[in-house]
Image (cartoon, rainbow, N blue to C red; front, side, top):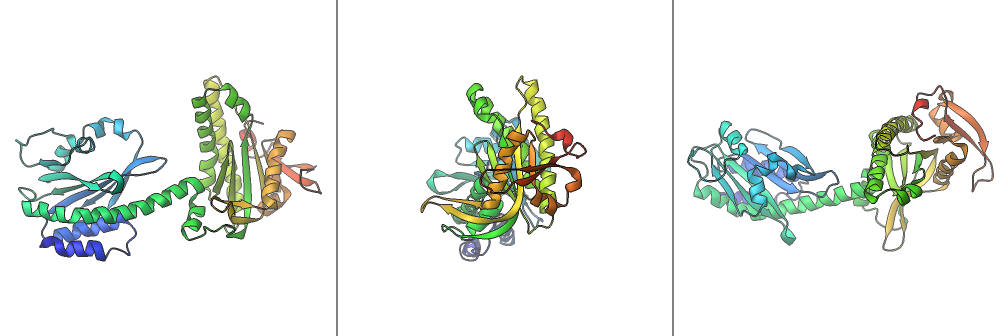
Length: 398
């Protein structure tokens, strides 16, 4: 029985392989070695991701690695998808099969069939990959042998797919867990949690540059604007602020209504400079966002950013059953006070002397003198971008 060795390998020898694409590639290669004429194969998964609705893993004969392609939300409304065998399958078909070398074959003539036929393929089919609780994904195989797959070949696939469903579900759920953690707590915190940092109080003390940002007059806007406009505004604001932070190595730990908390760990010697670069790019993005808001008849939006540097406790705090992976400590409090001080001084970005000295950027900033902040006995020296700073024309909302 040609499927026996492949089935034994799939069930017993893939435990150490984390990624389903690697398993899929090797399975296809083993099928070819066993005489099953597979020339192309794909796995199609629906995934839980804030940006993508699904993903496709593609293998072709001769490739040592699979190709991974993700699909954004809205693909299901495109002509490409609607005029495809996958759409027919997702509408409830138990199987979709096409003998590509038979010009008299019944059924719709999808553009994909023409592409596959032009590349020398002769047979193509989609079967369901059934996961628990009714989750239904798809697997496809195509042959380049004249006449396509035989009945014996199809029997091999039928033997293997239940095991492939189990193996793929385990890997997919692991990927789902990692993606959900990355989505809600960020990539660095998710690594800590997956590594076992799940007990209350677990954590480490780290040095970090700290950035706290808050949108101005959000409560007023929430009362005056329609709900959908408020959500669109928030999403645009967070895109403007977050993408530069993440691009420059910052870790966004928390969204607090219309505010956010991010750190740049000092384990990176360029952390402070990276934070300044992120602020500059975020201000430019925010200025563009305000241009769009003005075109829509909305008032320009303002914001406040407080920046400090120091040691923070990085880990789990909360109740026995509900934890938050975040940073706490006096340094975080000072960054928060500086953000609040932007409302008084009317400058959108305020930085502490401790940060400025570590970043060695005094020459690019304006010293605004000492200011008292709540919770500190001594006043704190405060800096802002000066008129000669590269960021001076980007201080939207000042």
